[in-house]
Image 1 (tube, one colour):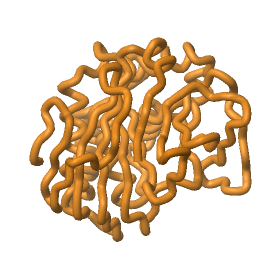
Image 2: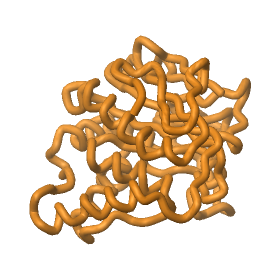
Image 3: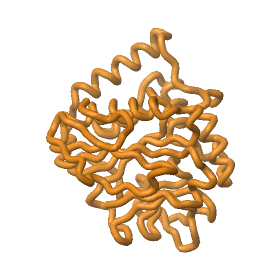
Length: 259
C-alpha cells in the first residue's frame, strides 16, 4: 500500500508533512493501560490548571484555519480534527473514549498540536493499492463516519485523501469515511499525524508526536513501522523494509528509532 501527495498539493502547501505509524498484528481489545493512564493524567492536569488545550490563536490550529480557507472551506463551520477535539476537551474537561487505538491518537493530537487519524488497511482498495492526498474532483464520493447509507460529493478543490474515487477524509482532516474506520476488530492500521506549517509545528515536534504514538501502539501490535511524507518524499510505501517485532519501532523519521 502506497500513500502519495500530489504535486498540486505540495505547490499550494509546501510545508505539509504527514507522519505515518503502521501497525500489523494489532490487537485492540478493551483496555490499554498506558493509554488509560496517559488520558487520566492529561485530564487531571487540565482540571488543575496545569495545562490547557490549544485555542484558535495557537499557530498549530491557526495554520489549519488558513489552509482550510485556501481550499475554500470555512474552518469554523467544518473544523479540522485538532481544533474540534481541543474545543471539546476545553469545554468538557475530558476526551471522548471510542476504543484504545482511537483514544491513543486523539491523545497525541491534542498533546502535540497535530491532526491525527487512522485507516483500517484491510479496507483500503484504491487503484494500484494507492491512497492519494489531492484536490477533490467530479465523481468523488464520500460516506460520512457513522452514516453508512449517506453519500456526499466533496466540492471541487477541497483537499481529500482518496483511493480511486472513494474519498476517505473530507476537508483534509475534518471527517473520516465510514468504510475505512478503525474498529475493535481491526488488525492492521495506518495512523497519520499532519501539519501544514513548519513554523507552527516543526520537524522535531512532529517526530516526537510520531514516536509517542508508536510507543502507545507497539505493546499491542506484532510490528510497527514509521515513515514520513513531505515535499521531498512525495510517495511512501508502508512497511517497506521497516518491520520490527512487538515493542520495537523503526522507520524513515529523521529521529525515529526504538521507543
